[in-house]
Length: 209
Image (cartoon, helix red, strand yellow):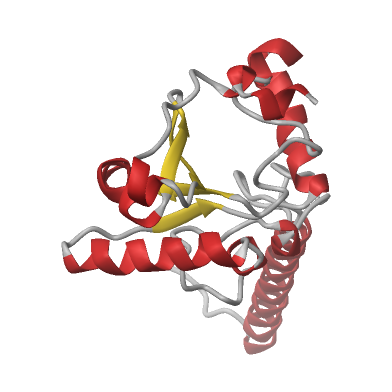
């Protein structure tokens, strides 16, 4: 036969359970808060800082870095707006006519500051392993047509192909065989056709200075 528990004992037991649950709840809440704070302070896996590591924070859009799929009509971007006026005019006329044929012309790179060009050259040396090989792809700041605002890199490939076929009608010519996207202005090309492209920039006498 079981005796009935004394009411005071029942109340004490219930009070103990309530206190224990409160302590457990507080501990769990504290652990959650700690983990949340730690997560807020540490970057998530794969996250990057606000500094563009590609350019090591040395250059910005003001130096000619362009957003993806920049338009030839993007006057807000120095990389487009600071192209030489005659080149920019020819590019825009060509882009307008290409669009009428369903080809979207974009600017991957245009005017660049000397600092931006130097950084690209250093990256090319690191990528290709030597200054000699890098020179086939990236000019020095003093020789670069991009720094002078006299060259534009066109994309995507369909637009570059269209420009190779029709660019001479606007005086826009591919300068190098190994850079199907790189165009410069040759006004005489409208009447005489584009000159033969150099194999790569190392054949270009302008790069020898």
